Image (tube, rainbow, N blue to C red; front, side, top):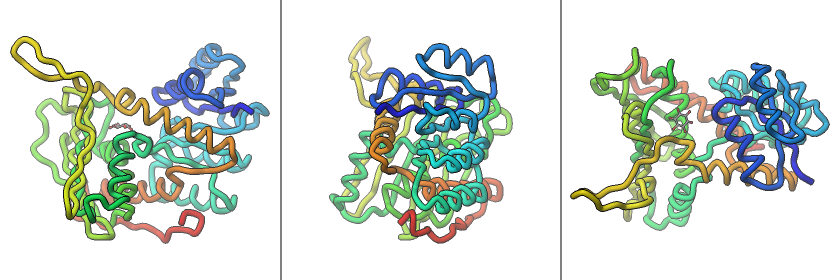
Length: 335
Ligand code: ISE
């Protein structure tokens, strides 16, 4: 039957997932929504047929109409929600980050292993983007030989209030961390962060832009320009440099215009627009695999590894040093 989903968190991503499950994808419905803000969660629930509002994740998970959980609350609230879902053995799609630090990610990893089977798909949605999927398949086929380097750009038009240097790693670079591990099928072993003289108009205390350099276990180098207040729009691109050629994705496409003595087009405003289809595909795939009792996609191991690289990245950022990533052994469940 139709999968009854509890959506936890009704902020930007949570509200967008409620809309997606209700209006875009098939096979699921929003049976419950959760937010600490009781008025807000009631408003969201009232707009969806047969949807009950809750202020506690565990209460929503006890609702007999709930078969699966989509966690879109702030990262610091994820561990409790994940453990509550494990207590009921419910399937989970958890927005990134899995949790904000390696110690809590490890606790989640261990709790899932105690269940004895995977329950969690982590919301690293770039793995569902059509362009990234094409690049991944070219690299997997060995079309241009062994990858030597990746050059990434990650630019946001601006940042929400309170955005910090550490968030440039935890919220933004975390996607390049996952993409690097996925595209190259290698762990990241060390991180360095370089910072040019910042943008004059950067919000207080933010060192923007930054250049991050990853080393992988296979000796590949991956650089990422992080520029989170570029002002002109959202741009994410990735170029793989291989032994026999290069392949690049993410350049803006769409309508190309000639007018008034100029040529050009427009730049995507933000990640919700740029990755809209990736989010749709991600959630649809999660619903499909969950309905047949399977679990696929980025795992708790990927969430833990990303947290370990983020922790090294934040230290590298603060010290200016090369910092090695501390990563445990990959458990059998995730091999
Ligand atoms: C945000 O949290 C995201 O997840 C976006 O994908 C990313 O582009 C942005 O930089 C982050 O702040």
